[in-house]
Image (cartoon, rainbow, N blue to C red; front, side):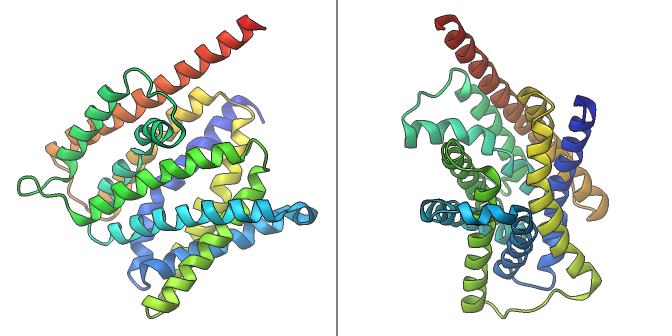
Length: 296
């Protein structure tokens, strides 16, 4: 695989992730939010587990514990997102979830005591103003669905920061399989306790849950790992920023969601904040790498 094909693959993955909001909406038409989480991550677990093969023998209890913690964070984050989608648009959900990039430096500061990089406050302010244009209705009132998506974005940032430290000493595929498994089990447990569990309704419902599990979760992660071997982190970061754009396009075209001038302005501000935040992080990484090389 060459760089061009890797970037095209990553572009397709980003499109799949942007389309996930539409299929979560489709799934919620016939099953509850926790049941949807159980189906999505249960299917992803089965698909990814088959790829491990003999590597299962190398899984330790420490890895299982780490997978449980990451799975719990992902479960809460995705539950908040799926429940939030019941009362907000795919457009809002896509842009608010993309704020994970902005939240990461603050998680690093609060949890791991790393200094917040210069300029992050400006990009955060851009994003906050953008969210205001996107979501605030009837004055200073945040839609409950938007608030839950915001919580999901913050928890996704926590998961990324924690997982990045685990991956220093743990295989990425193993961590993902364990994460998928525990997230699916937690979804199943809560669904059995709080919801009337049911099978997806009709072909559209079944297609939605299999698309989310196989394409958005299992395939998306594996394809990302493959693509990252053949292109730069900068290019991957830019392509990631297209996820909310795809979410908006799909929501407007297929669900006929409203997207007026205020929403357009808000979306532009959020996207600008996400892109600038990612660019600042990559520039800081390059500077650190250059400092290390100079010391060597």
